[in-house]
Amino acid sequence: MLNSKQIMSKRIYNYIMAHKMIAFGLRPPIVAHLTGLPWRTTTDLWFGIHGRPKAGGKLPESIFRFMKNKVAAANISAFAAMHVRLFPDQTRLGAEELLTTFTEYICIDPDFDINAAYRVAQDLCVGIVTMRKCPTCRATYVSSGEHYNTKKCPFCRTKE
Ligand SMILES: [Zn+2]
Image (cartoon, rainbow, N blue to C red; front, side, top):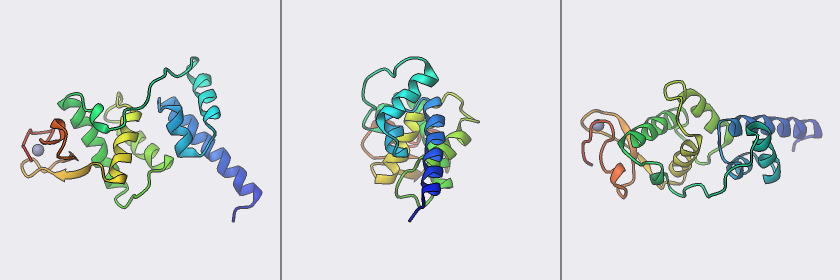
């Protein structure tokens, strides 16, 4: 059971996490989901940071919508490989885990979309996609067996 001081610390901590994720461009409803902050707080934060309301439209429900080409598939696989290496036993995605992997990963790929990062990390947690090791180049990549951009290794094009 948390005392009032601990509850306040947790709220401030969640607010700081939300601020970071929104500055990176993560959609407010996802930030609300990950931090437990009210939706309104996250949309206000978005406006405060970006100076305009968030454009409408739902986040694609599957990571495959982000895999528009083999470069995107390779980048998503590289992020996912780093994420499962940092958090091998993760069953539920948290804000801290997402931010940890994302801030590491953008050192090598500064243009990576945090919304794609969230989607693939979430899909890995619930088992929509898995990581497969390529028998040719030994890279690990996102695999589902369904989408054409996950049926081949995105790094060397070896088929499953
Ligand atoms: Zn390969």
